[in-house]
Length: 231
Image 1: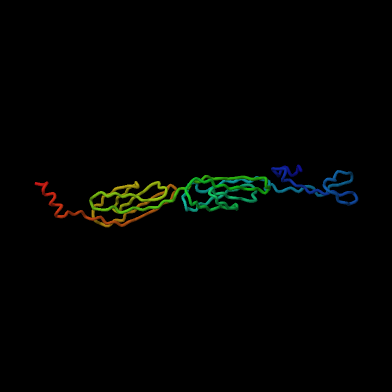
Image 2: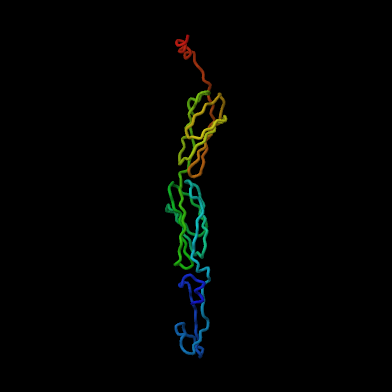
């Protein structure tokens, strides 16, 4: 037994196979190897050292993600593992000790758990990683009405999801970095206005519209209304 102790971390892992022979050649059991004239033959059989090392692991993968995005979680395992089980915190489970891909359908906070069982079933270990899942974003906006050259127009993002920021490109060199912005077009030229929405989960969504401002004009009736106030 002492010869096994140096290679095993738990006594329960040590096994022995001993037979004894009497002087007359008969084989007796292990418990009868104490009488005079009984000589032990084969002695100890111990498992390898690696089978005695308890499993442990760390998990790598995204700590922040968004709904619908497949995120890969990879274990780095040491020790001797016989089986692995995964729990993704939303009722979904998996088995196996290889990397797992996971996409959550609902925003929230989740704990990814990897449970390991060693060659000795008494040896178990767990690794975990906290994950925050944000709602994926979409991008959209409506064209201002009316859109008149030379007059400031308001643009408002009508996005969904967990929005972190918005960026506008008005197609004429003008930009803005708020989800509600205003812009004045100098002339009645078609411009492609682009909205880029960035989500808290690291995703982006883009929406573009081609808009053509109109030129301001006055009717004779409108001019007439001015005449009474002018000299």
